Length: 105
Ligand SMILES: [Zn+2]
Image (tube, rainbow, N blue to C red; front, side, top):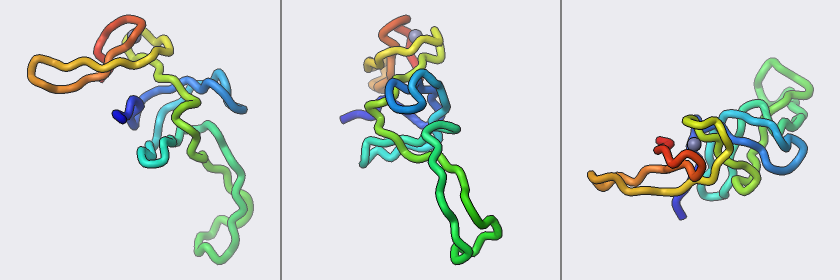
């Protein structure tokens, strides 16, 4: 399977508590089919003294969410779009937007 969402992409959340929001992809865990979106899917995590950091107590962090819960927001037309693929003349495979048919990469 070719991965459709890349690090740095803006995505639209389709389901869950952050449904309807948009954020930037910070990390993609390809193997698990999950990704981390900046500022979204925040979980509170208790951090103890044993961790070695000075910050003790509850910290907030982004938890990975299933890639099936997000849609790419096309940087060209700013709409959330399904992604297709196209081969360039030089053989490179690029992503294309189903809405505006522009190359996303
Ligand atoms: Zn587009």
